[in-house]
Image (tube, rainbow, N blue to C red; front, side):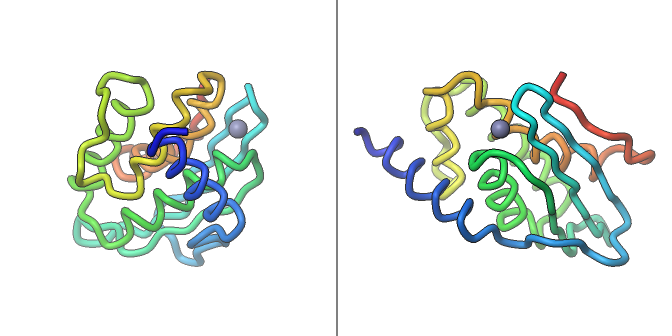
Length: 149
Ligand code: ZN
C-alpha cells in the first residue's frame, strides 16, 4: 500500500469514527441540505459567515464513511478561514478528487488523504458532497439544496 492509500485509510477511519464539528449550529446564517443519491449520503451543513469569514461550521447527516469523514475534515479545516480561502480550498480539493492534479499540493495537509478516493471512482461524489455544500453556503444567497446529480 502506498503512502497516500495508508493516509487515506487512517484519516477516513478516524474522522468517520469521531466526526469533528458534528451537530446543529443554532443561529447559523446558512443552512444547506446536500444529497448524493448515488450512495444515499445526506447531510445538512450549518455555516455562520461573518465579516467575510467562516466563523463557525457544523454538520449533521448520515452516509458512508467517506462522506462523513470528508465533511468532518472539511469543517475542521475551513473553520476560521476567510470565504476566499475556503473557495480556494474547494478548488484544490475538487482538482484532487477529479484527478485534474496528480499530486496533492503540500498545503492541503491532512486533506491530501482524500486523494485516496480516486481508487474508487464511485466514491468521488461521496467525498465531494460536503465541499459542494460549503461552496453553496459561502457563495449562494438562497441556500438552495445541493445534489451531486
Ligand atoms: Zn457515499
